[in-house]
Image (cartoon, rainbow, N blue to C red; front, side):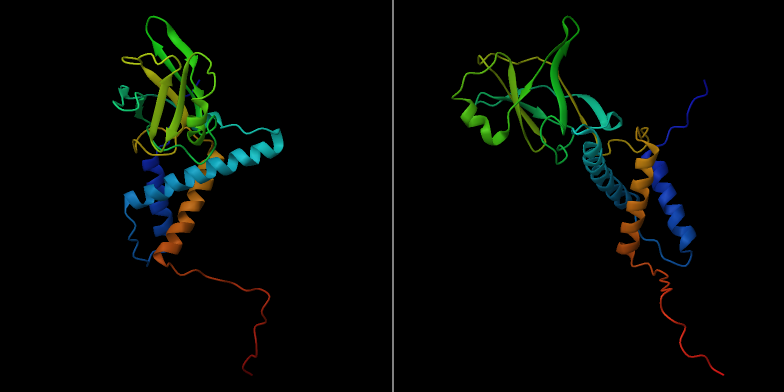
Length: 219
């Protein structure tokens, strides 16, 4: 089987730059790579959320497309000396979807026992109320920005545990990594970024109004 060409965000940036220069050769194209990358990441997140809701209208349930999911091994857990909760940092803040969709799953794993049971999620605003209710045995977690906070139901230690999280990835970690996205999503992102750059740079646009008469002609 022939190998497929791998596309990266660096190639997408170069494609956008060439497209803008070809369409407007006289324009002073002043957008830097990092600015274009910011637009790409924004468009990627917006495209993902829109695609999920569009699929939900057809299938009746909300699900994150597999192409956007990435599994991360998070940094070592640290215990808060006051609250006694354990915490670590996510690769990026989750996208604007409920827990279970923005963060698909979280679990502990090691070389001896393999993959453990999934952690159960608690919304941050309900965590204090849940402390007064019976809890299933295991580890609960809540999200605050880029921080994941965990607690063992019996107050046990989580020191030395390896925490894995699978979540939607929209933030760039490497310009040269392969973009594991559907081709239609890449095209939508490209068009979105080009539109934003045209607006930001004030590039003139030709507007043809076909419904307006040509007016009086000189005899």
